[in-house]
Image (tube, rainbow, N blue to C red; front, side, top):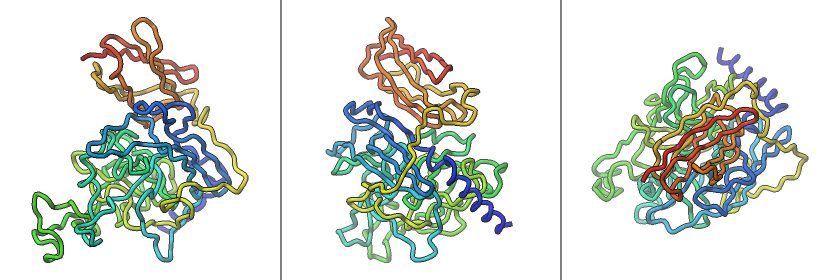
Length: 405
């Protein structure tokens, strides 16, 4: 059975390579809308191009949701003008695995960088007890759990909570990004049986366990204290095979809605309270073969040397005409920010137009997509009644909003 499973996967990859598979269609495209917190910065992905073998994604590394402030972090987000390259036929690396380094290690589907578990610092700068970024930098993350580094590259070390609805345990989590070996990154919920699409959904559990003792490493590390509590160093965690659902890379081979014949996939991991759980995203080394040009300090500025086709999300989707605009909106009344989440069954390419009670257009959000959470900044508007018109093709709905103090 396992042999048949792999053969089916190979056949699927051939079919996908000749069509517009999820590695092409998953990206959130936008060419005009700006970030609500930084109106001078165009958000999400600006261009997706593909050939028979590769996908090229041009992006600013600026998300479409509100970002900041960052306590104790003086950095300012900036347009990175990235062009990343992804193989359309990812392959397992059967040789020496490529270690996951610092800086961007993959890209979320809104064009924002994925960073690893480390903050690039260690105890006494000895390179032995390496610091866990979520512990040391987490207090300075914004509400979407991201922050910019020195060059203005906004990124997430952990599950990007504003990118998708991570509380949705009813649907299989969507593809939320791709690693640089071409394999997908999923949200936290997947089929309990990796080979059975009818099995119940469950939250994927990391197989890493905090094994910290009072005297770390028999005294080689700092003693556990309020300054150095358990879990603040990467080495506090050990991989225990079978203790969770995922392998040492925080991934597994499985069936997903986008890859019904199977694929290796990475997962973000959350604890019982839906807080990020170590190692947060993929970890240690890449499962597949990593293409050159994406990684390292100068990576992410790939030159395209082959003929490509431009993919446009406008009009994309299966049976789009039969879909309705379905969403969740909260909170309402709203004091500062409200969030709109379009369910996986919703139409694509939704335009939101916010009007005040006198009929004046005060804000527009373009190119909103299913399975994505969008922030609506109401901080600059006086209290009162507002109407959010949501339009996609011939479908239209209106959401009444109450702005309060």
